[in-house]
Image (cartoon, rainbow, N blue to C red; front, side, top):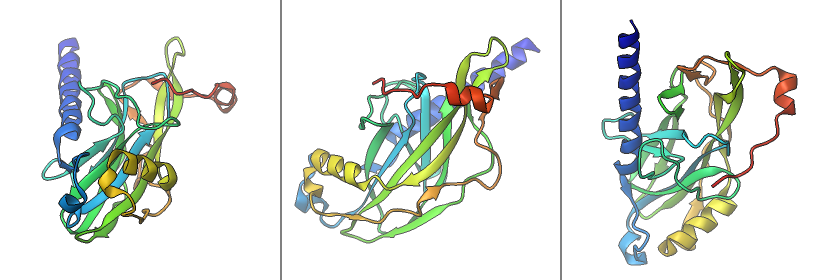
Length: 234
């Protein structure tokens, strides 16, 4: 039985490693050195994916663009980390995240789902509500910031503080995100149009966003209130 559990855990770890690697190589990212002429007829989206700063470097928030795996793109808060579960330096001072400037085909697209991973653990529950949008040839749209708030819990043994659950929301951080995009991609200067997806909680059909695979419980309200906020650590 122990060998079966070990094998199952190893299989899950490999699956999440493949998922993380997929987020680093799937899709068409705009070249930072692209010229104005080179992208003037492209359909481009700008979106950031982030999560709360915590002391846990192996946390990673993910967003699926246009489905799962088959032709989909996975955008992650750790961006193009050099190794699975490695933490990439954040693009932002107030959250751990990565800004994506992504070329897509003109037409209708959707953010299909979100989830958070920590090692071989991931948020459970059903798929999130799909968020659709349209982008035309020659347009550059800022869709917003997909941010995962991390709820801390404690282990059943020794009461060690660890991530317990996650909640995702769409936020308008156009002021900072667009400034960073135009600085990093000069050809986009003055071309990004704000078209933020519906603001607020990006809810699931069911499930509470708890991390599956960990013997963890929620903190009591009074204990959680006493916990100091985590400061940026990158």
